[in-house]
Image 1 (cartoon, rainbow, N blue to C red):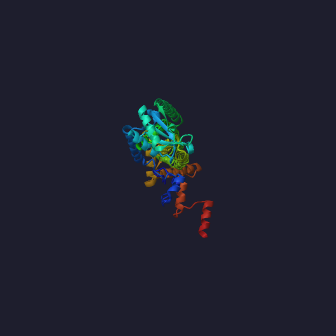
Image 2 (tube, helix red, strand yellow):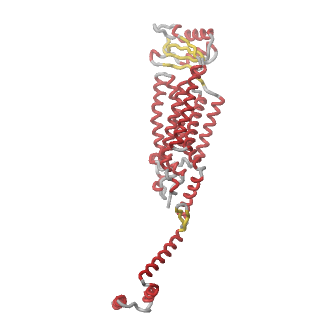
Image 3 (tube, helix red, strand yellow):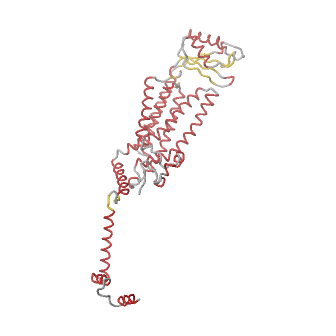
Length: 426
């Protein structure tokens, strides 16, 4: 009996005593025998990921982004992080700025480390009068130290930033994204097939939208480093999706010529076989990102590294989820729209029903009855024996004589008669 389950697991991995159910989650995850029915629950994943995309789109459309000064333009005020009273915190600088103008700056962050650490205050474009007022308040409240180690108003500098540079960066990023998507589509369509290309593009759209939505939701500042990081995670997401699709392609090669598994079951098995690898790859990839956050942003205070690490961390997690829970299930739904895969699934179901309940079997798509086959075999054997007997010249009379011997009728003559008589005397 074929015990292949709806999750596409190997029949040898699951027996009637429920061995698979007794195995631990980690063991099933490591062996990748198809114990997790990911494709079978694809409607659930569609709902969860669809709601996540919808919420992300609403935040992007309603709240928008916290754009950095490079995109919007404005004024940048820089000053040493060391004051007459010691280290100057970002909270102290923000409070002094707010008291001077009555509004909060766009961002305040520490840049650098040690004695060269500075405070960067970004705000909307200030008039000359407002700029003088802010610089005066910062000097009086915080007393930043100059190069001679004494408090100095000259240690506070300012610069005007135009939003043109950020706009150019964004435009170039969008062009690069469009070229990237076109090349990816062509590659997947030729190397795999068109439906795999569609699934991969939908997964990429999910990753971009979810990452953008989380940035908008939490209020992370979007800088040119964020845009660069976003392009980076697209490559990671596509890489993970291609790995899963390659396993799907391997499992479904020659699938229509057998009735062991359906296409959804073979795809689910591929996802299970790639699950542990995807987890390991994601963990290893997130370790450097965590290092950027802790060391680069936390210890060194480099804001650029923080922006880059945040978008990469969020995007990698979204990429793993989309490649496993969205791309492959969507591929299954698209493939099952083709009549040949639906017919094949019906054949697999019929074969399992026949072998599990009655005496019929499916062979090459045609249903035959086991009992009819047996009767046919007996009939054929009988005909063969009759033909052989006729060839040997015995005919029907000789067979009739042999049958009558056992009932006391005519006895066989010659050597056969003597042997029979000898057995009776013994």
